[in-house]
Structure formats: structure tokens, C-alpha cells
Amino acid sequence: MYMRAMRIPRLRRLLRWLFMIVLCLFVLLNLHILVNFQPGSTDNQQGLNFNDFENHIKREQPHVQRGDSGKRMLQNSEGNNRSQFIIEPNFFNGSDDRLTNSVDSENLTQIQIEIEKVNSAQRIQNIHRYGLKLNHESVVIVVQVHDRFEYLKILLDSLKETKKIEETLLIISHDVYSEPLNKLVKDIEFCPVLQIFFPHTLQLHPKSFPGEDPKDCPRNMKREEAVKVKCQNAAYPDKYGHYREAKYCQTKHHWFWKLNHIFERVNVMKNYEGLVLLLEEDYYVTPDILSVLQMMQNLRNKECKECKILAAGNYDKTQNFGANAGKVEVANWISSRHNMGMAFNIDLFKEIKRCGKEFCNFDDYNWDWTLQHLSTKCFSSPMKVLKMKATRVFHMGECGVHHKGKNCKPEEKKKTTQNLIDANKQHLFPNTVTIGGYSGLKLRDPKPNGGWGDLRDRQLCSSFITNSSLELH
Image 1 (cartoon, rainbow, N blue to C red):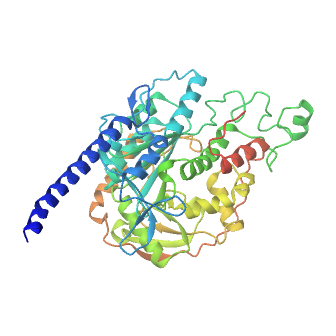
Image 2 (cartoon, one colour):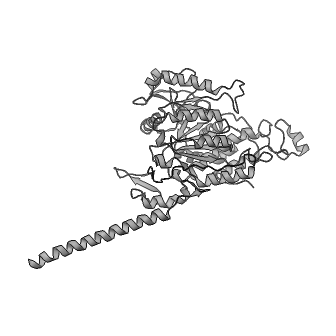
Image 3 (spheres, one colour):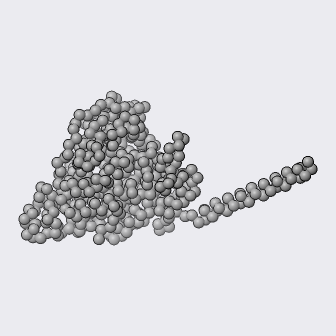
């Protein structure tokens, strides 16, 4: 008994020493991480560089597991593996993680270098405020932006008022590098934001393809005359005998490039299974759009698995929120009716990519008409859509590529739209979303609009399928 009593204090002392040693090692390990791990930076500005961060987040977050394929996986309570990406708020203590480089807007070489740098760094601003959590229930918003500052500001004003926007990754995809636009984006403080830049722009190629090359054939020149004068794309008019117009071709290039870049090049989007909502700079959204989309996705999974697209917006001239606030219509996807506020997941992107050659060779400069062509001629089955009967997206643009109105007054349009939303506040945020009808309109292969006969456009478009960051030579 005496010997046993002597052993107990010794054992306790030994356990205390072991505990102290483990504690000291833990402290030293954390000090080592804090001293040696620094997020990437540009010109000494603090930022979150996901190329450097990738290995760190896998190693340092114990709740993230590695699947057999190397994916970041989170096991849920039912034991099913789903891809999930998580960064906690205040993981980095930097107060400013935004890009602040100043670039001469007249120096195209500087702009090109900066675009490559931004696309490579993949910095997400406001990450220290909100963190980032992406899983199968998330919505990532992608806005395609040209050069209309006032419209983009109005769209951002509406997004700021959207419920749960702080949980959303907002990706702004530009085809013009502009300091005023950049500042507008950098001033966003309501959610995590990633800027990307389409690298094959008219701005960077003002006198060569994909811009307007002086050696190119004029749009309306007859092919016989073009061959005679030997303009360089004489052999490639569209099916109506017209030659390419760069300003119209850019939109389709940008649309296809951004999908490939986001799904395959943006690190935080790898293996992302949730919704991607496509918006344009001249849209305006309701405060409940994210909540409605999540309910639409749940409805799709239960009652319309063949619906590959969710359409949050519609073009109906009269909106009856009282009767239709929580109702959707099932329809065949038709480009002119269902292209506003489109949301889908990686499964549709994979189908678009599989049909990428057909997308790039279809003689139509419109991405949406081309997508309808794929639906009828290339996809495994024609696309069906769940469309909100009471729109959650409004089209504000009265000036732009297809709109030549002289009275462009975006603030007046904003006021009218906001008044409509305010008058229907009681109908927003429905408790449920249900199917309220089926459209009988048949899906047909659209007649191509042309404008996409040039071999160079088809080759550039095709290059995005395998390399979304390909540089022109």
C-alpha cells in the first residue's frame, strides 16, 4: 500500500510535466505559423492571395478533410461528402485587402500587366470582415461589366440591400479597365468581392484583332470586292455576307471566357457545387433574390430535376407580386424570355463546355441565342427552366450595345423600379416557392443572327475551353 501511495504523486508530476511540454510545443508551433505565414501582397498592400493560401487552409483548419481526389470535403451529419470551402472572419487582421495600384489608363502595356496580375492574384476584398463559406447551398453572384459606371453603381446599390449578401461571393468581371470603375468596386464593403478582367478586349487591341484592325474588311463590303482588295478576313464573312464587328463580338467572348475562368481558374470555386447567378451591369435586384433562389433550388431538386436553369427575372410588363410572389413557371428555356437573372450550377457549365466547339462555331454573336442552339442540338436533353412569375431582377439599361435611346436617365428608372419594389414589400420573402404553371411554348433551334463568321473569333473562343487565361500572340 505504501509503495502504491508513493507512485501516485510521481505519476501526477510526470503527467503535469508532459502537459507543460505539449503546451509549450503548441505555443511554439503557433508562433512559427504567425511569423512565417504571410498572405501574398502587391506593392506592400495587404491582401489574400489564394495561390499562396491554398495549402495553408487545408492544413490549418481541422474540420476540412481531404477526399481521395484531393478535394476539400466536409462530412455532414448523414455521412455524405460535399465540397465546402471555409475561411473564418478575421482570419487575417489586415484592415484593407483591396488592390490599390494606380495605372495610366492610356498605357495599354501597363493595363495588360495589371490585368494579368489581378487575375493571377485572385484577391478577395472584405475577407477579413465576413470570411467566406462556399458550399452546395451558396449563391455566387457574377456581374459582367462593360463601361457604364452609373448603371453599375445602381446595381450595387440594390445588392447592398439584399438579405444575406454578406454571405455571398460577388465576382465582378470587366472588359474595360477603368479607374472610376475600379474605385467603385474597391469601395464595396457589404460582401466579399473578387475582380477579374477579360484579357482579350477591344481596349487592349484598338488596332488589331480582337479589336478593329485597319486591314479587316468593312462590315458591308461584298465578298467579291473583299477578295479583290485582299482585306485580311475576306474569306470569312458570316452567313449573310457581313464581316465581323468587334464591339458585338466581344460580349460573347467575354461571357464564355468568364464561365471557364470562374469554374476552372478561380481557386475558391474549385469543386463548388452551389448556384452561380449571372447578372449584368444594368440590372437591379430585389432584397429577397438570394432567399428566393435558394428556395427555387430546393424546389428544383424535389420536383423539376430536368430544370437546368433558374430564372430569377422576367420581362413581363405587368408584375403581380400579390398573386405570384412565391410562384414559378416551368418552361422550355428560350433565350429571349429566360436570359435575365440566370442561375445554374457546375453541371450545366460542364454541359456547355462539352459543347464548346459548337458554341464557338455557331454563327451568332449573341451568347444567349447560341446557348439556345446548344440546348436543341447538342445537350443531352433540351433545357427546362424554373422562372419566377414575379420578377426579382429588373433590366434598367436603355442605352448600350443594343439600345440607342437618347434619353438615358438611369436614376429615373431606378426611382420607378424602387417604388414598385417598395409598393410590394409585403409580398417579398415568401415562405415557400411552388410551381404555379407550365408554359406550352416549344423550344426550337433559333435562326442564327450572324456576326460570327470570322475564323479568328471561333479560334479565340475555342481557346477558352482549354485555357481560359490564354494570351494572344
